[in-house]
Amino acid sequence: MKDPLESAALEILKGIGEDPSREGLVKTPQRVAKAWREITSGYNADLDKVFNGAFFKADYREMVIVKDIAFYSLCEHHMLPFFGKAHVAYIPNGRIVGLSKIPRLVETFARRLQVQERLTEEIAATLYKVLKPRGVGVVMEAEHLCVSMRGVRNETAYATTSSMLGVFQKDNRVREEFLNLIKK
Image 1 (spheres, rainbow, N blue to C red):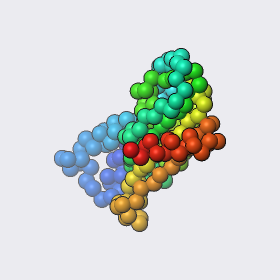
Image 2 (image 1 turned 90 degrees about the vertical axis):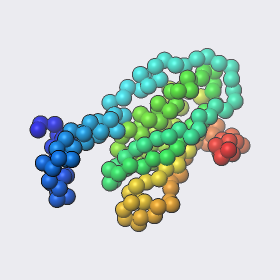
Image 3 (image 1 turned 90 degrees about the horizontal axis):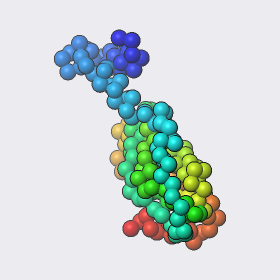
């Protein structure tokens, strides 16, 4: 077994006292390696391919929101999942982006070892940089299994983070409009 992810999975099985030769576990190292490659695929993502040139001229000057974007990520501290919903908004400045590119951007950064705070900021900063809008707002709400299934074992706690750039940061009315619209 030369695949480092397969070898690591095998060692984990042994480390927890399991028998890796047991029928149900024989192929587990291969399945774990495949799963980890998928759930950490954000490291290999090319942002140009994520956006795929889907920028369009538009005179639209009001807020664009894609809300309730489901995401799954891994806590970099315990390598346990955290998951929830992202709400992403921007106010165009002569250009819009294909709406499907926003969930793809969220997924790209979520598929890495993360902390929710950095994940939120990476999404906002990237959209702000590539689209050059008047402003960007991102709010993320997530349940962290490192909180709910281990340690404090609080099953009802969830974390909310935000990143506001441009007019979302400078103009309280814009920020409030965004926050009110994502509540609905």
